[in-house]
Amino acid sequence: MWILAMTLISSFDCVLAGMSYASRGIRIPSLSKFLIFLTALLVGCLSERVSVSLTGLLPPGLSEVLGRIMLGLLGLLMLLTTLKDSKPKHKKKSLPDNSPRTLFKLVLKSAGITIQVLKHPSEADIDRSGRIDPLESVLLSIALTLDSVGLILCSALIGQNTLLFPIALSIGQLLGLIAGEKLGARIMARFSSPLAKYLPSLLLILMAGIGFMQ
Image 1 (cartoon, one colour):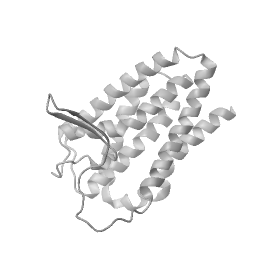
Image 2 (cartoon, rainbow, N blue to C red):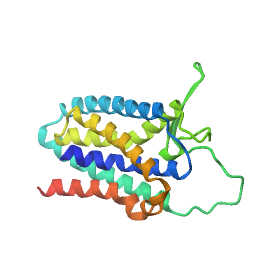
Image 3 (cartoon, one colour):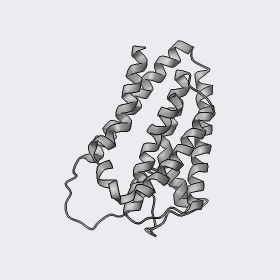
Image 4 (spheres, one colour):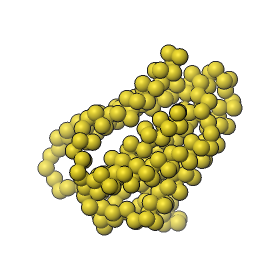
């Protein structure tokens, strides 16, 4: 039940991202979808192994309490981020900036490589080609998996650690993205309502609170 609940929560952003792409006519080819799944699976498995190692350093009782607290804080952080992004921004008129917003960027000058992690998954079409290319699909998957890494860590601390978790999360992300594509612009307006945006974060806070009351 825990894995199912976490999978549904983590895949919600994927549904919204898929709907956003479909409403703008951006395609995600099959190869890109496979790379999204594979990247999410690799990141998830790595996070699960690291989380298990960390929990081994803490007493069982303390790790469970810490996991509940972190789960609630993760939900609160997601809620505050959504509130911040929902605020209208008043800026002076200037030329539109079409560059994708990033959380951080790593430049490897010696190799001529620039690695950037997107702030919003819906901005993964960097070259404005109307399709998500293989490289862009990796960036999209990392952006979608960031919250899942936190969920895996919290779950391991609570005692819900299993390799099935990252597998379920990666499958949930892929299915969520496909479902979002199918739904598309037809119901985009409904799911862009405040309730839909805040639902994942509110569910995390609720689940953390229920855990403390048990």
